[in-house]
Image 1: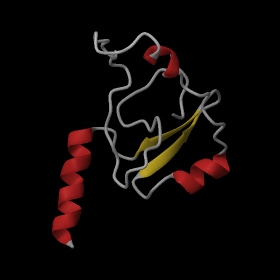
Image 2: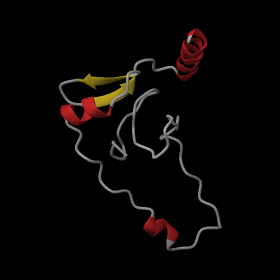
Image 3: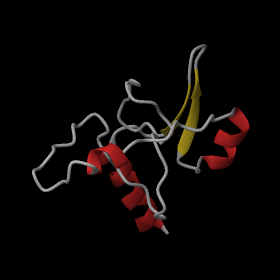
Image 4: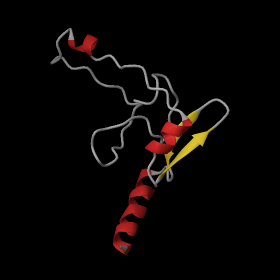
Length: 99
């Protein structure tokens, strides 16, 4: 994860990294529901490590061609060029169709 708990997020913001090759759209604001299938110690093992410090150089190396770095006086965020997911998918299909 690139963000700390309690960070305000918006659609299209890059909040973490995955081992998969394609992007995964997630809702980080959605609460994880607890079930009775977990053991008592399982919640203790689910602690997040602090996010790594992302410098401008690291962010420039990390982003893909469809992503941007947003810099404000207080924050630096990575985000998708097109924030709206359905619009991103629509444009991706058009780009694949034009090839």
